[in-house]
Length: 67
Image 1 (spheres, one colour):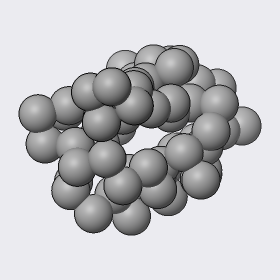
Image 2 (spheres, one colour; image 1 turned 180 degrees about the horizontal axis):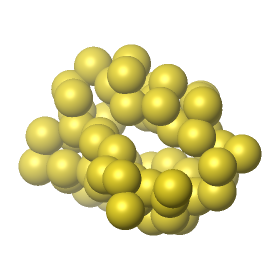
Image 3 (cartoon, one colour; image 1 turned 30 degrees about the vertical axis):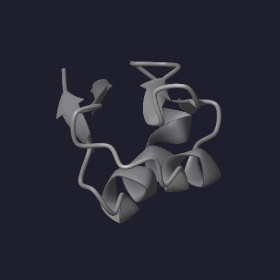
């Protein structure tokens, strides 16, 4: 099963913790001070890191959708 990563930039507070967990999936727009999804459908090999990023986002701005 594959999955898709979503980021709610209206909720993001710019903590950048997601980048620490999955820097190849999550980037950061410094001008807007919000997360940027670099890879919306990362492979299964990245799932554990993406799940951790979603779990530990202080603003609850990230989500995973099973597709």
